[in-house]
Amino acid sequence: MSAKEQMVRKLNSHTVEVSLPSKLGYERIAMDCSASFAKMAGFAQDRIEDLKTAVAEACLNAIEHGNKGHPNPRVLVTMNFKDDRFSVSVKDNGKGIPRIPKDTTVMRRIENLKPPKGLGTYLIKQLVDEVEFNKLTADGHTVKMVIKLTDKRLSPGKRQASGGTTN
Amino acid sequence: MEQPTEIALETIGDITLFDIRGDVTALSEPFLNDAYTKAIDLNAGKILFRFTKDVYINSGGIALLIQILAETKKNKQQAGITGLSSHFKKIFNMVGITKFAKIYDTVEAALEQMAGGD
Image (cartoon, helix red, strand yellow):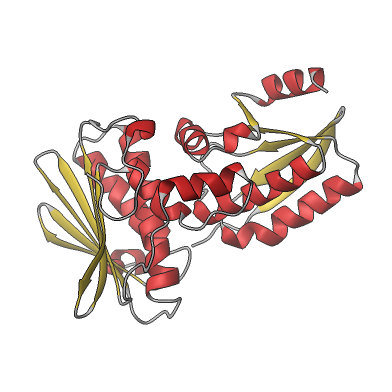
């Protein structure tokens, strides 16, 4: 069994779990896995690309900020497809994101050509249909995202420009 | 896991082409900075960033590109981008990079249009 196969576990016919070392680059495993699963579920390529980027950014936050780059606490990515909803949970051992910059703050920094903080969470909010940050439990922090088979999102300009949960 | 960034510089007329291969992430910083320093040494007035269609660019890579575009603006250089997939064209538009660097569908279109501008 390859190292990649050892990281991926099928929990049931609708659910797959990926356990990643907290090391930059390993988010690619979760991206590839989510893309394959979403393709099997019938997602169009453009939605799969959105999903891959959102999964990558959630994993990067978990690796860098949640587990602070320590390789031992794993990043656990759970994917589930049911009806027309593809949900992804990304769990780390951290205490959550203390302050999620507002979309307007991120964009203002970019307009002034300053390196933006919170670009990853900004991208996630733009690309998925629902996202919930800062789900805290006794053993860590989870980001939960949902992307739907049919893109019913509003245009980016009309989306809620705030941190926290978007629907 | 990470595909290391490789950047080759090529001068075509008055345009300096950054041929970028591999991943573009936070770890690309020394490669992008080194390439940009060389472009400055070449007195580059116009810079075209060429990506491959299957490139992986994450938020760390986008932040670096924003820093480089800040430098091009400060140095009064014209910047263009080409080779992106439709997904990354959407992402670059979403984050506002397109306000500072025009995206071209092909290298040929970029070279033609950038060569015409001053």
